[in-house]
Image (tube, rainbow over all chains, first blue to last red; front, side, top):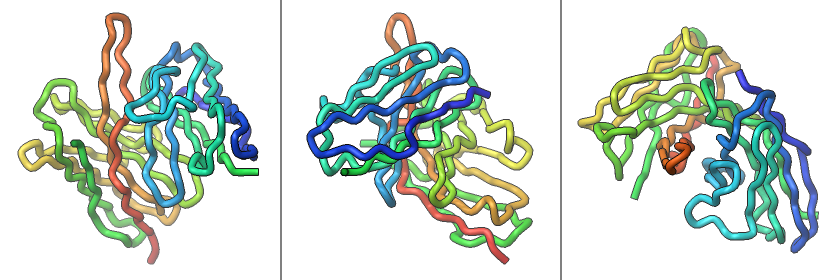
Length: 107
Length: 126
């Protein structure tokens, strides 16, 4: 089973500043990675697939990068509505696994 | 437009079997490459993938839970059913179903979950 490790656990960022979230896979997953955003009381929402492609309707301030074992989600200019928990998930093989999440909050 | 909705009991007793139904619209599980997955999320904790069923009835299960899980489909009713046996209080969680998107380029197929149900909270308590 591939273990996904996210850091940091919590990220405090001022409005308009950049937020950088990390996700590491325990073995190479090529670019088979998705990022999801989850707000309190809501279902996850896909942001990024293929490590760097934005899902439908996702604002351009969200970007993904990386391949192999190291991945990054960047929010270029944090908005108040971006406060949420962000999860990475691989789809390289079975079982699909998620990271433990990074909570993004406004400083 | 794709929508999914989970339904089932909100409370089960320890050792009982949980049965959840995902009712969906906007796609057909008779169509090639379609798939639906189930997930759970204990309160305040991370998401966990549980099971997935394909259009051709092929199934995948989380190895840690495979002995307790069963996933089935009724494509004519646009439903996918998940059963989990021998429920324990640690299984208390919000359960989600989701549509598996498959998008292929000449070099790679991306398979992520693009539409999710609202989730249903299931508590396990005597």
